[in-house]
Length: 99
Image (cartoon, rainbow, N blue to C red; front, side, top):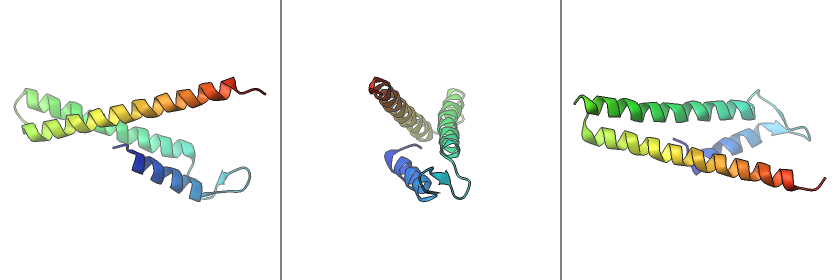
């Protein structure tokens, strides 16, 4: 699940592995790698919610597990949407900066 604590830990991990003016990665971990792993986690959470919902439809899942999986997927989607909105806002702010 993506949450502010995980995001801060990922940022701290990335910041700790970079050095110098160019901020080149020391151990090969790049920002793209961090984003890729995060995206895979988000997709996994959403698929888990979908799978549990499908199992509930045919009576193969406990209602508590279904509610938990769907809630987790919902929170993950809300977090991703909030991060996307912040990134777009920052990009628009950069575009408005005078050169």
